Length: 143
Image 1 (cartoon, one colour):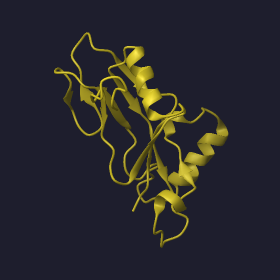
Image 2: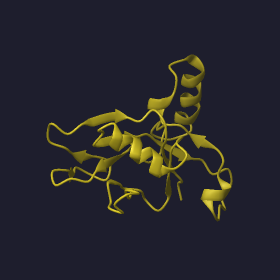
Image 3: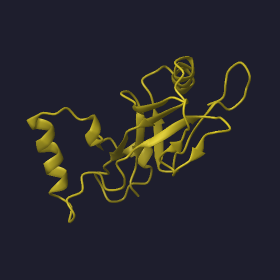
Image 4: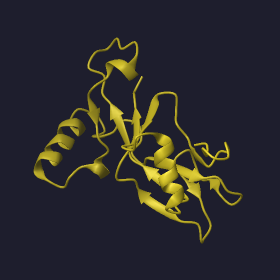
């Protein structure tokens, strides 16, 4: 995210070539400006998975319309549990998401932020680390 005023990078998030970042804000700039205005130095986004409905998918960003929502974002009710069971029963190791389920984090650029992995950052106190974002996230498209 570049600051509109200074044209300087303010936040960084690791996104793979087969992932999209989305937010319910009008633009990602609005989203990251909101994080900055609220003093949030790091936030983790839930990852969801695209489910191709045919074997020969040429452009998964355009052709995939079925998605598995991250289990941490599902309501705690019987219908959601049945949906998770449907997907876990289809895999040998009873996985719900096939790739990863711990999300990815955006971090505010600072001298003290260091990567822990592609999924999270180490921030020493007093930097503010938020939990999962309740809106927006990453969508992965299995190849």
